[in-house]
Amino acid sequence: MPKRYWWVIITYIIMQISGVIFAPILFVVFPISEFDAVIYWSIISFASALVVVILLMRPDMKMESHRNASSAGNVILWSFLGVFMAFAAQGIAGMIEVELLGIDPGSENTQEIMDIARAAPIFMIIPAIIAPILEEIIFRKIIFGQFYARTNFFIAALLSALIFGIIHLDPTHMLIYASMGFVFAFLYVKTKRIIVPIIVHMAMNTIVVLVQFGLDPEDIERMQREMEQMQMILLGG
Image (tube, rainbow, N blue to C red; front, side, top):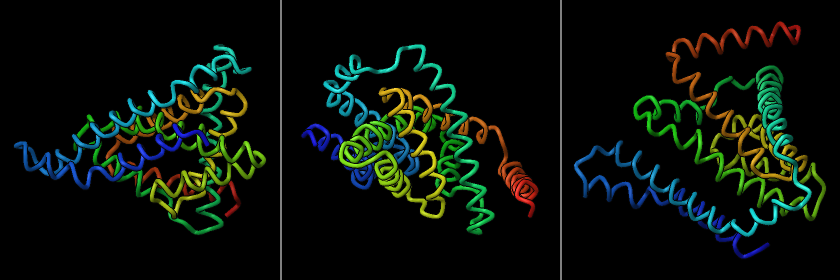
């Protein structure tokens, strides 16, 4: 694996753990609340990591532009189709979790993000824009790409999707994260452009954030109950 890929991964890890040190420093140095210190450092660290990763990945951006990659038209087409594919995969995975595995619907990770976004709307820039770019570069471009060069699509997609799910610290809904990871990997292989899964990932996160941002917790709970009932009807429960 190229040395720059290791630096990308190291940058991502540093970004994830840096808040333990620097958020308390912001809280002490500036007249802000502890919550605001965490939010501000999250934005600073994610944005800084994005800049570093983009600079490190510049050689790959140049290679991708002339390596049988999809045209601009196909990029738009697969980005559009990919959103529906990813939501469909997520829906099927959710049905399997509820009906076959007995897992309650609703992701704690998503709920925590929404609670933070409601308290500090500026935080939305992370799940809607910055995180999808970083995650697709790391989990599809680098991790999936390295596995795919040595194995077949299924094994590479499975391994990268599992790591993708583990990183989200929501093991209960591993199947949902893995299903989305498979779709993102397929889009990357199909188009040979990492920008496609990035766009789809950004669109999915933005749609989820905007929809839940406009709903009260009671409305979300009611929708989850209705979804459970619909799933039971579809599966003959």
